[in-house]
Image (cartoon, rainbow, N blue to C red; front, side, top):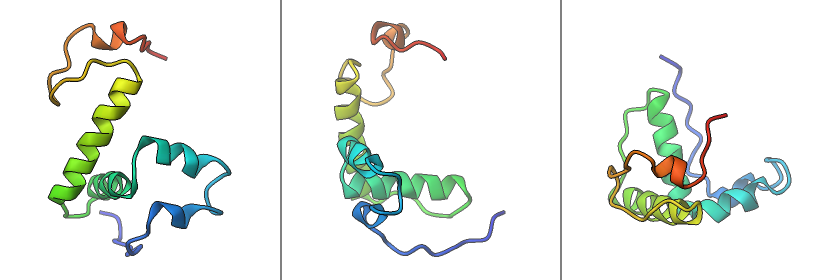
Length: 95
């Protein structure tokens, strides 16, 4: 397992000037600080951190995910109800 490194609780705007120009603006279009905290927690869990999502993080993640799916042309559905053909119908093609 990787060594755990405490990076604190940074807000998305803390990465301005570190991330390439325009990157934070693009990320902010996908979600707010709560969405960012949720995706960061998921990333850390995949790296071995023993942590789940808070209710706020879960709700923020799902709200942003639904909004982003609609912006991409996916039908608005309850999570887990993706149907065969949805990706094709939304114009998503394999690389």
